[in-house]
Image 1 (cartoon, rainbow, N blue to C red):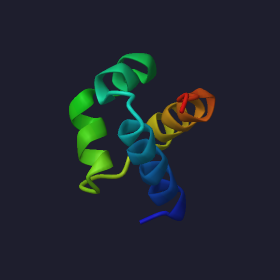
Image 2 (tube, rainbow, N blue to C red):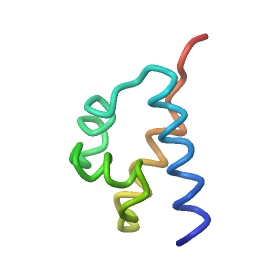
Image 3 (cartoon, rainbow, N blue to C red):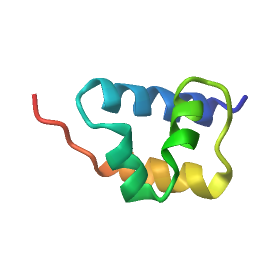
Image 4 (tube, one colour):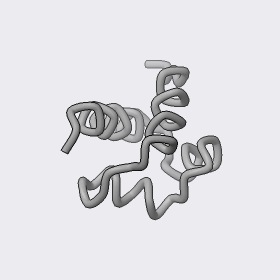
Length: 65
């Protein structure tokens, strides 16, 4: 499994833990909630296009403390 996929998974988990729901992330990225869930839990890797879209979105997300 790619190190980039692992880092992206960690960032997704941290973002969800901070309060942003997967449904909102799915709506903004165009990745279905079931794919996000399976990716978040380590069951699948995302294709390059989906991974790039998710990374671009998560890089812009700011969760206030």
